[in-house]
Amino acid sequence: MRVFVTGASGWIGRALVPELLDAGHEVVGLARSAESAAAVTATGAAVLRGDLTDLDVLKAGAEGADGVVHLAFGHDFGRMDEAIRVDAAAVGAMSAVLDGKTFVAASGTPVVSGRPATERDDSVFPGPVAGRGDIARSVLATADRGVRASLVRLPRSVHGEGDAHGLVTRLVALGREKGIAAYVGDGTQRWPAVHVVDAAHLFRLALEQAPAGAVLHAVGDEGVRIRDIAEVAGRRLGLPATSVTAEELGFLGGLLAIDQPASSELTQELLGWRPTQPGLLDDLEKGYYG
Image (tube, rainbow, N blue to C red; front, side, top):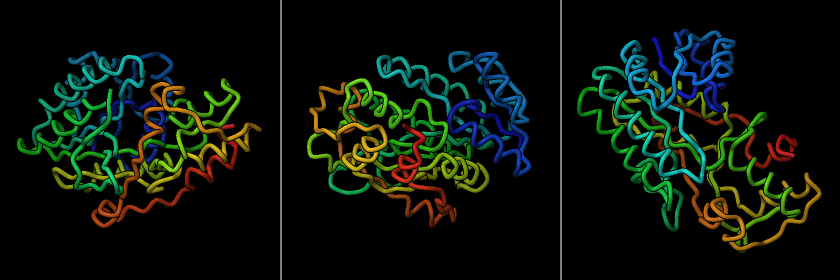
C-alpha cells in the first residue's frame, strides 16, 4: 500500500514510518522543513514538502496514496483554537479526495466521569481542546462515502526514550523550574499512557485491518496516578513531590486535575493488538525524563 503520513518526522511518525516500511508499504511523509525532510528521508521514505496549512499539498498527497495516516497537530497550548482550526481544514481537504481509500487519524481518549473511557464513548474533550471532538466525528463520517476511516485515540502520555515534547516531558521541565515534582490536589487523578512503539504498531494495524468507522484506543496503562508520576520523577530529579493547585500549573494543571483513565479492551479484541513495551512508570524509572 502507498501511504501518505502527516507528522512523519514527529514523535509517533518516527516510530511508525519504519514499521510501515518493514511491513512492505511504500511511504510518503509530509515534511514542513528541510530538517524534517532529512529525517523522513533517513528512514527510507519519500518526502512531500508542506505543512497542514498547505491544503493543495495535502490533497495531492492523499490523491497519490492508497491510504493516509494523519498524525500531525499543532501542540502550542497558547494557540489551541488556531491549531484546531488548521487541523479541521486539513482533515477536510484530505478526506475530500479519499473516497474508496483508507484514512486513519490520530485523536485523543475522551474524558468520562467515574469510569475508564472506552472505544464506545463519544469524543468528548475538556476545555480548549473540545473542538477536537468535532474533527474526530468528521473523520468517522467519511465512512458514509466509502472511506475506510478509523480513529486511533491516544492517551495523555505517549512515552519512551527520546520524548522531547510530550506532557510528561513538560511536567518534568516545570518541576525543574519550580523546584518541586508537582501534582494537583491529592494526586489520585489517573492518566492513561502508552509506549510510542506500541502506539505505532496500532496505527499500522488500523491501516491494514480496521473496519470503516472503527474507534481504537492506543492505551497500555489504563490509568497511572498523577501522584505516582510526580513521586517517581521527583526521586529521579532529587525534588520533593508536592501538591499544588491546578492554577499554579496553567494549562497543564487543568489536565492534571482531571481523572481520565481509558481502556483498550475492545481494541485488543478487534485487532489482536497487545501492548508489549514498558509502562509509563517503568520508563520514568529508566531516567529518560530526568
